[in-house]
Length: 130
Image (cartoon, rainbow, N blue to C red; front, side, top):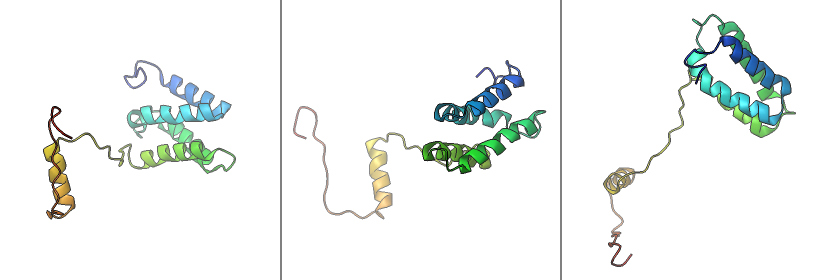
């Protein structure tokens, strides 16, 4: 958050990324992926003075994501970061949230073309039957 608020120097970003890349363990590469996801939307702009250096990190990440000696889990994680970057940091992954019963019934009706199978499910109160 301190980097995103631009309280810390950009040198810290590159120091962190370079250090994580140098170690190259699963843990540090996973940390790098999370780190880039967090700061990417703020710093991944050509207007930033250090964009070329930032872009070079992604070149390295892309090479690692193609390296068959790296575990598939880490390669897929890094590829997800690269895909997210290619989409200008806008996720296409839709997270469903809990729905109220009326909204659920409406959604079911829309999904099934408004037709019913003739069965009705009723919910009894907690005092009664289930």
